[in-house]
Amino acid sequence: MSNYKSKDSIKDFGKQFKYHDKIDDYWGSHEILKDMVNPFDLNLIKNKIICEVGVGSGRILKNLVRLSPKKIFAIEPSDAIEIAKKNNRYSEVEILYKKISGQMINFNNEIDYIFSLGVIHRIPEAEIVCKKIYESLKPKGKFIIWLYGKEGNELYLFIFNNLRKITKFMPDKLLNLFSIFLNLMLSIYIFLCKYINLPLKNYMINVLKKCSFEKRKYIIFDQLNPSYSKYYTKHEVKTLLIKSGFKKLEIFHRHKYSWTAIAEK
Image (cartoon, rainbow, N blue to C red; front, top):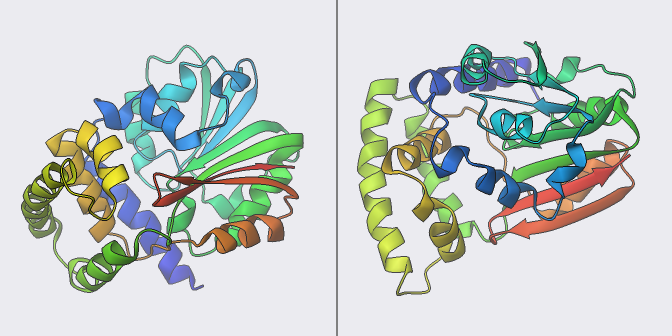
């Protein structure tokens, strides 16, 4: 993959968090973190050295802090790292922020647990980053990753992949307005899912319905804005992690639209 795409992805991330910097409600809750990493036991990170790759605005970081790890390394290559610092300024846990890309991670067997939730699918050089993550873990350390899935998203991908060909060139203000319009349509779709077995019903009812209107608008903006976004098949998730060095894997289909994987070094 070209460096151009990597730089674009980093720029997109920093830009969108400038407009969507709040980490309140369900979208920034412990409940959604637990759902994203299930069945991993989050209590295991207490008094451990952990790392989050791609902290964004710090919504996941905030909830990891509350679980009392010994230390957290927070990796974020974009300007969003300043928002993460602001949102976690009262942390009682030591947070070491590093404004570097995933390709530059180098902890040399130092980390107990590494999290990357909703990030790797935005990185063109995903295998390079995952290899760096593998090398950074202690023996028996674990990598917990959440990725967009291809299975179960066929209709969604048909619609949004075509929309993205246009929206990725939209000025931010216009894309924001378009996201509001789509959010109104989404609200109707969520309502219908209560009574009709529509595609992505599980995700609509158990995740999106719990988010505020503002957060759903951000999710739509996030889907339409990036220059690069990959939707993984289960086989591709397995291949990515095995090529990165991991041998012991568990992969789970979250709400029939995404993948949660727990990989042990």
